[in-house]
Image 1 (cartoon, rainbow, N blue to C red):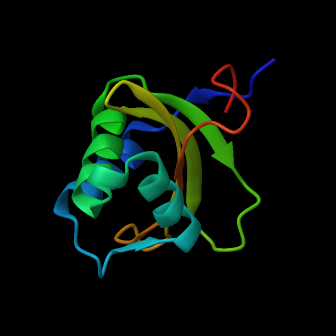
Image 2: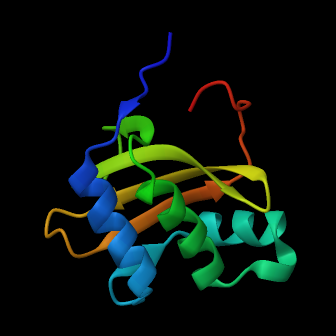
Length: 117
């Protein structure tokens, strides 16, 4: 049984907006997230490509994901699937309590298959 559920619409809208803005003062990405994205798409390792793919997924009505409560940093963190070039990608983002900044923890190929987050 999966714990996936609808991700709150306001969280999706806010995160997608910040991703589309692409302001690196508002978006922190982990080294692991950067390395794994680059390994998956070496010819498209630019932030704007990754952020656009993530935003597209979050802009779809009724996007589902998994709420993550084990991160060290405060905020609302969700894991979700997104696609780039028809490849499924695992994403995990934390919207910090100020509602203006993000931490992108994950953007990599599925470690556990695509059946569950």
